[in-house]
Length: 137
Image (tube, rainbow, N blue to C red):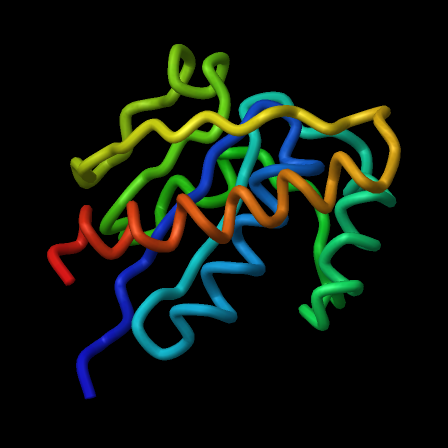
């Protein structure tokens, strides 16, 4: 078995989109990818709507919390995915160069649960194929 590729999903607040992307990648590409998420300016907690949207899809939510990008700076990252324009513009330089892709998603923060569910489904539909392609699968 090959070592899973480490994918960092980077957003501004690390409270909605990047958290959902981390969980979806770890679930849908289990064994092939080890997904992490972080924010350039992390929020105090993961949005309730993001947690509920993940739970409604039967995905795990234990242990999710916003992390600053500095917390993952020393990870050996194989791919960086920015999911908002601000994160793309402020994405730091990592010690080991890693390829980057930008795949923006709507920010559902402060919106009804249905918006989080729509974004969750959009992440699953577009991010999984994009990561597969970027990693050459």
